[in-house]
Amino acid sequence: MVKKHVSSNYKHLVLALFICASTTTRGQAFYALKIDRKIRFEARDITAKYRPYLVMGSEQALVFQTTVARYLVKKHAVEQDDNLLPSARYHLLKRISGHETSEMADVLESYRWKEYMRIKPLIQPIPKPLGSNENFVVQE
Image (cartoon, rainbow, N blue to C red; front, side):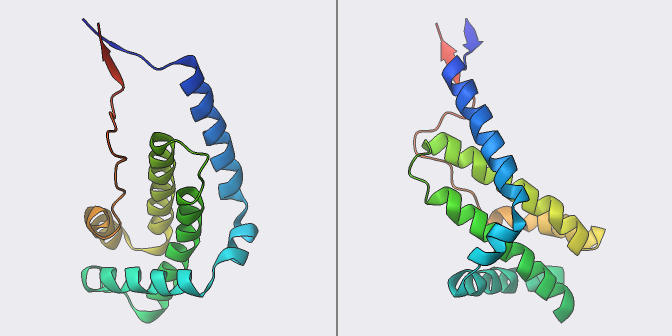
């Protein structure tokens, strides 16, 4: 018999992380202050990888790059938080990536956005934590 099992403590942790993530994703001004030179260069490099696939003009590429930079700040903040369990970190990174993808719908035309979604896992993968069991299935 196979049952899905998620402990009550885990549910509380996920809820707390969701609240924290929701609160921090709305604090755009805070993140704007955190975009440093390293983040800008990383966003530029990521944008350069997408350009052959998305064929963006320079103005659109700049908006794309700025969006990538904002989400890189959030991604790095989660990656550097030692208080997060690997599975919680992974789920937050997936959520941040999902928000970035959604926001790109406002930056790109629909045909470019579809191509962006197709190649994003290749250019910006989210590595799963070692030993993760995505289904949290317990066998009895």
